[in-house]
Image 1 (spheres, helix red, strand yellow):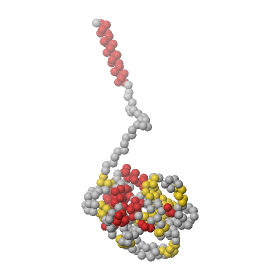
Image 2 (tube, one colour):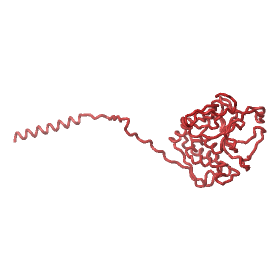
Image 3 (spheres, helix red, strand yellow):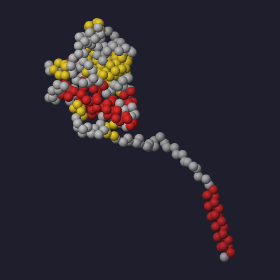
Image 4 (cartoon, helix red, strand yellow):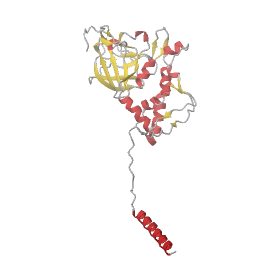
Length: 316
């Protein structure tokens, strides 16, 4: 019994000492874990979707810009992270499709004659627009800031470049190879489209239509099919080239039969539908390149030689 009691005493003493040693051992405050590069990362949290209240009535083209401006003004009062018209509509691309679909000739193909495009409905009663969150706004803004409008004059086919990639190309007309007296300039003007680098300096959302040759304002147009309509409400874009505002605008033509020709007073003319896609790719400050290159690379990586419409005989 004495031996057993002594043995139990030793066990109790050993257990007590072990507990005290464990209590004295300090644990680190933090533990660092290094994840391998292949470890899954936490996904970016999705932003809450915000929509405007449904429209209480149809909104026609003539009130389109006033409506979008009021929406932007309202949401900028609370949380405006560079929200503007271009970002709002790029977040709602169906609106660009709607506006492009108002093209007179597209409507005619569908069997619909449009006398006054300003009376067409953009937003129907019950429609809503999605307000982009801060993360999405930054992504759209980044794309817009990377945009370049590249125009090779004798090719008649400008390209919209976004983050180094062609996202859109379209047929155009360019300035005629001649000189002409223009009342708006008060002198004889060379109508060739100028070359050089520049940027968008003005967006005219409600342009006045003036005949440069006579200086007279007009409100209607004779279409290629012989029908008369009111002029459509489509923005015009003005670039500066090499720091000079020559007046070589980018704007729609109501006579697309002239596309692919040196026909204008220096402007870049395009289809009504294409004009909307260019407009919503080109906010103020967008870079533009107007060049004159006769040798280009074709779709099959072969070299193509374009017609020298200005008689330059060389690239410039």
